[in-house]
Length: 128
Image: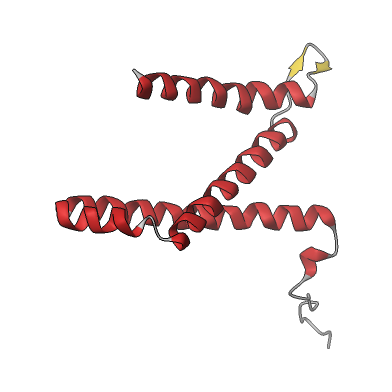
């Protein structure tokens, strides 16, 4: 009778290759972003709880751990966005005729340019 067990995999399998490690870092950033979304939901619930609850929550945001958490969330969001934009050319190659558009142009058109335009629009809307 044959042995149908799965081959054993070390918990650190992703450290064996650089690409696997970078992939796992990218997937971990999704968890960080999900945690930040939970934080935003709590923030909104505090806002609904009245002025005192909201002010207490705002005061808690000045704690060093809150600042570190926001910096980690920003770093995770930036890493996630950059790796997503850079991989878009692999997922969705664009051809003009039979010639493939260079990867950098696909990344710019699909990710970086819209990000810059939207950021500029938001900054303009907030500043006026």
